[in-house]
Amino acid sequence: MAKSAPGIADQLVQSGRPDRIEGRHVNMPLELGSTMVFDTLAAFETARDARYTPGTLYYARYGNAATFQLETALAGLEGADGVTLTSSGVAAITLTLMHFVRPGAHLLVADHVYGNTRAFCDTVLARMGVEVEYFDPMCGADIAALLRDSTCAVMFEAPGSGTFEVPDIPAIAAAARAAGVPSILDGTWATPINCRPLSLGVDVVVASLSKYLSGHSDCMMGMIASTSDHATGLRKTVMAVGDKTGGQEVFLALRGLRTLKIRMEHVDRAGREIAGWLGRQPQVRRLLHPAFASCPGHDHWARDFTGAAGLFAVVFHPCSDDQVRAFVDALHHFGIGVSWGGYESLVLPVKPQRSAGTWTEDGQLVRFNIGLEETGTLIADLAAALPLLNTAPE
Image 1 (cartoon, helix red, strand yellow):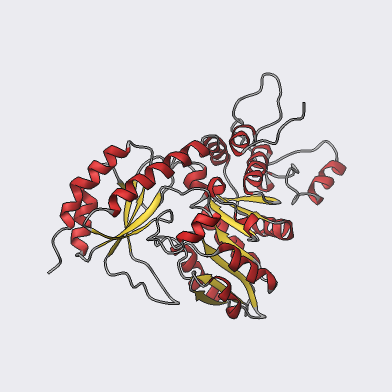
Image 2 (cartoon, rainbow, N blue to C red):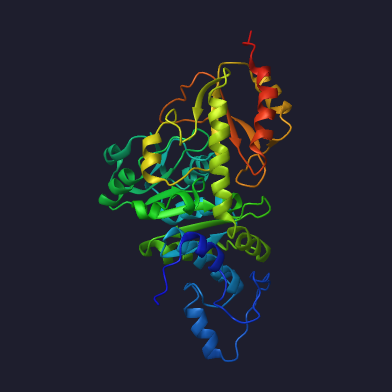
């Protein structure tokens, strides 16, 4: 009887560890070490010459058995030809951009990108002589008009950081590819459970494993997944810089990956329930959750995504900063923190940065990460704090 192709849940359980061996560990053991030794000089030279090939044991900075297992698992989930791990999600973004830019080049960056992406572009890349142009993330195929002979890459997110617009991924990727320009997408929000951008025409996907992929707020790591055209070059750039993931982080990411699907299914359901409830409250001016029609790009989400994450935002009716602070401080079951994607619920006021346009929503923007707590507990917590926003600012 022919063996059926593994589904995504099967991959999450089975991939990222050796094939079946009697008496094996369920989890990959924590692997530590730096130097790898060889019995002959010829064997060492063979490994040295193949050190950028995943799976080659040469020196631990280039990978070990555990990192190769994790990279293989992630490549299968993303549908990528190659994955390279990095020490953080920010490192995945910055090293990818460094790989493609050059002095005098033109880089297109979506105006809704993660703040650290913007900071890197405006400081480090600016000092390198790279011309960074921010574009409207909802421009779709019209991005073709912005592409130049000197354009080295297009960087965007789906959805946008903090404001959750969902761009037309295939249209932007197709326009860039037609011009011979690589497209880079930050896919941290969706994870490969809900979207596989490489199948939509994107060339490179970067993501923070610190968020949903590891899932427990105890691991800092990033990844770069790409097509065969860029996989080896990106790996060489990461290795040249000397970026390296730690053994404990690899262990934690492999462990967290096993429960990714059921965690994403929960935060999808819980996130929609709580977002829908918030959207009906009188204090809320607008709900910014890609699964709801009030969010820009909802139609793109419905076409290209199979589900949603538990991270979204609302725009409260105009009120003072002090009122927002009082609301946030009154929540007992939402921590205050910059990250998200773990098992705990979080809340954070957001001040959007824009260069290509302006943020025109009239009101206070607050971001929520829905974790694994009981939804009734979280709704009751929000209901108790929302009256603090009722009084208009003087």
